[in-house]
Amino acid sequence: MTNILVTGGAGYIGSHACKVLKDAGYTPITYDNLCTGWEEAVKFGPFERGDLRDRERLDQVLAVWRPAAIMHFAALSQVGESMRDPGSYWLNNVAGSATLFQAAVDAGCLDIVFSSTCAVYGEQDGVVLDEDCALAPVNPYAASKRAIEDMLRDFQAAHGLRHVTFRYFNVAGADPGGEVGEFHRPETHLVPLVLDAIDGRRDALTIFGSDYDTPDGTCIRDYVHVMDLVEAHLLGLRWLEAGRESRVFNLGTGAGFSVREVIAHAEAATRRKVPVIEGARRPGDCTRLVSGSSRAAAELGWTPGRSTLAQMIADAWAWHRTGHYDR
Picture 1: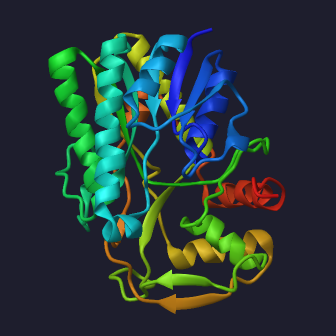
Picture 2: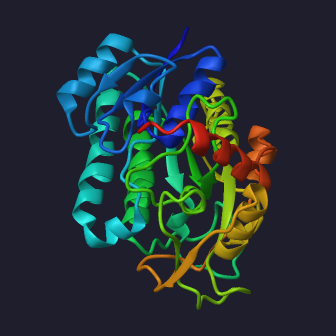
């Protein structure tokens, strides 16, 4: 079986990617420092605890497992936190990625599937967001991801490090089999926050900003089911295995939903009311982020078949009631 190193494999998206890799016949090797991930989520292959910035540890792991490729999910990813503490994002995300890529090159592992973000586009309201749009990140988290994209191109030019980069939109849902799901501490993602408010784990959901230039005043985002997302990563891995060129793909459905629309769908799915508090805007939040790209469908054959809001909330609700790592 082919070994794939999965950085951040104990996190939300990384753990789902490990499941898909195992089901496809690969051996996922999780590399994670557990600062935001959960060891309980490492169920589909070996676990190696370590930090991206620890070159000696990376060298050990690469020497033992000799992975054919790396799926790179590990990153700090909270927009608000990045505004308050940008240094941590540049040190962890950017310096950590530089250490990882150099270690990979020195180990002869020259295929990378990288987890980027649509936030690299910044505020471009009214623009169809495709892969050729200008990059203009408005917060340090997004800026760190753009820097890593630039770094990958430099490493390719110098060392032949090939890569598939996925700029994805908001991720939601959970493994329908219930083996892994979404759980952060603190929780920052909208769907689990809504479900927390529904079942009393928090007093209310705070809507951060109700005066945006949208039909109901709240931010609009494009939501992708986590299982659809990691299926795209598997297709990206196979793209590189086939010897194809480095490529950037947006992962979104092209359908945007406001915060209030997500709340309404959650109330319909659970038949419960969401208690709401209206708060001020958060620094760094964009008004609207929706994909206008069909590249992943046309070139990878990717179809986000589970990415309806009803399905994402239903799968998230099933996980929410039964699968928390803190239970």
